[in-house]
Image 1 (tube, rainbow, N blue to C red):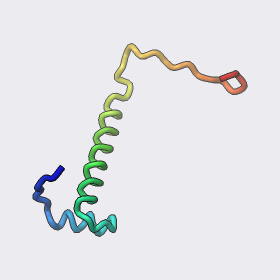
Image 2: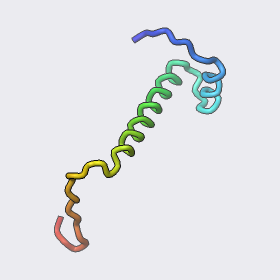
Image 3: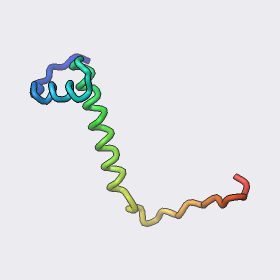
Image 4: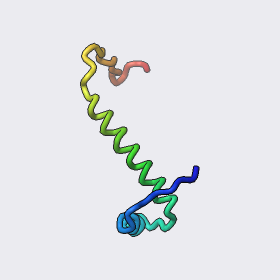
Length: 66
């Protein structure tokens, strides 16, 4: 999909310098993937221990069959 973006040139240059990637499309794609990963992790962390009705999982003990 084609779209037009206004991106801070200094921000784009810094990203290019840090990653070694010169293609703008790749930089934007990697930036979006990083943002998605970061937000997914943040949301998962926010759930930590918030399910009061959850049952503890059964644990395997060493030496017992799987």
